[in-house]
Image 1: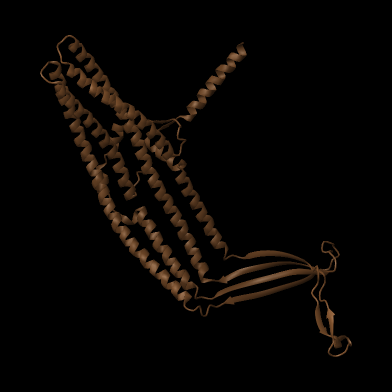
Image 2: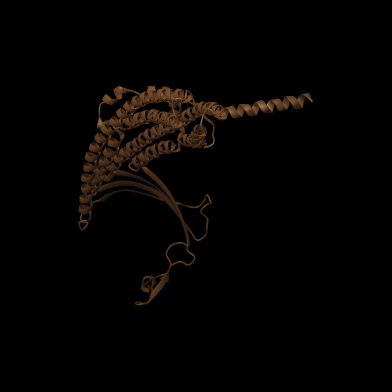
Length: 448
């Protein structure tokens, strides 16, 4: 019996070890780091950079020496017949003799080395490959900024749900005690039934809100897991505190941050588009230039009436060829001119879009700063309002139990308190999210 018991204990502890490994504890920065590594959109953006790097080399390689080999085998099931004047063979003038040229079977093995000597479109293609790589890197940066902002929002929503649950549970505990005391007073005939009913009504409302908050918390955890790239049902433990995190995110110096539009990711992306359109214009212009190629060809051929090409004594005849090919465009009925004009118009559109993007970014930065500043001011106001609401509720509670106030006034004070609590929690979350929005617009991410 000893061995089975030991085995069972080992399995229990092993399963506990595995379940502990499935749990992840996250500070906000740890959650951001995890998301940037595991979020599916971020991983795909990284893959697109790898694709761009491969494409860059693919474009570069088209201008490097190319070596190709070719093997041909032909077997004439019925050979072609030609006719020539019979008098070549001593026949009568005017008669024709039927002849077959060549053998029934033949094989050819050739190798061709080619080299691009000059092509304007190739030079533009090299520049385009570099720009495409830069576009992919900027897209990755844009994706990471959005993932960071989404992670902060998801993290904050979980903290908000947790804090809301704690506040509701404390309120319910206090209210249940008040209801118990008022019920005893009512049973002794010293209080009206309406007072009990008012407290019951308030308590039921809190309990309903608590159940809804529990459901919202579960959804918030699932959204958090999806955002950072974990399985939706995975266990994630958030170690930050909403109040402490809010205080950390009150950074007034951020409101004075330089508005360097050129360093923002949206400007870089718009500038990438302008550069790409400029290269397309250069590409169309390059099509007016000649294209020069060189090639070196070498091969062997064998001929026979039977398939003997694998025999070592088969005779092969060698040949080689060197050549240069120059392709000069002369006349295209206006096609190249129309394509060049179209590319030029698209470049002008991209330049206008870049200017508009610059103006929009300036407006977004100003709006984000204003929103962040308001969130800080609103947070400070909501803290003061909560202090006032707590004092008002406490005074009304004392007046009620001393018989100097009505249950309606107490319920009104309690409702005002609960509203102030919710508003403060939302204001705390706003400080965190508005700061992340401003950082995203400015492309100013704190270095950790």
